[in-house]
Length: 168
Image 1 (cartoon, one colour):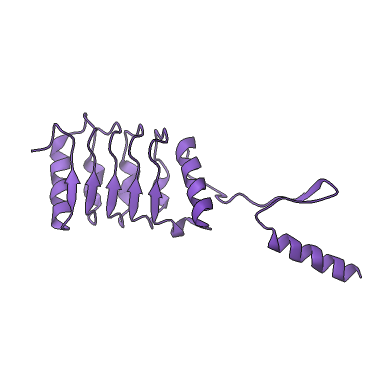
Image 2 (spheres, rainbow, N blue to C red):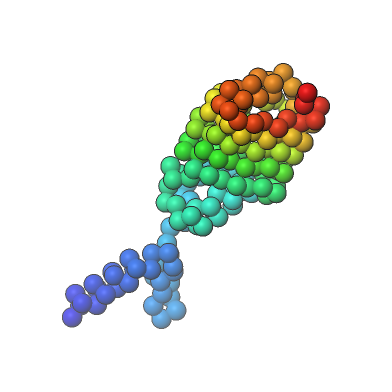
């Protein structure tokens, strides 16, 4: 009899792994968070990643190929370089100044960074697979590196939209 009860309890725990499990109003099991460990320190980016994991039912970072975190209040993308499977990334309308963490995302084909606070676009030069770049509204960005990135994007038969002060 104890075996049957134990098996029933075990099956119930497995079936309800996404929910708290309680007996007589006492919680006996709480599932681990979806994003167990995160190298991302920005709370807004972390919240966006957690929501993406939940919505798409991802279980690890290698499954994240697309991420859209617009108008989220993100100031830092430190730690995002671990998401090496990303091919599409939209971080428009945030407060991002440093794009250095993107250098590790060599699979990116789409990158939208409109209306941030980017000044140095040199890290984007390492993203040789880009075919869709939008970086308008970053009015302090240096144009020299952006021209080189645009050339690379065009070599991939893509399009790049630069800030007004760089567009020729």
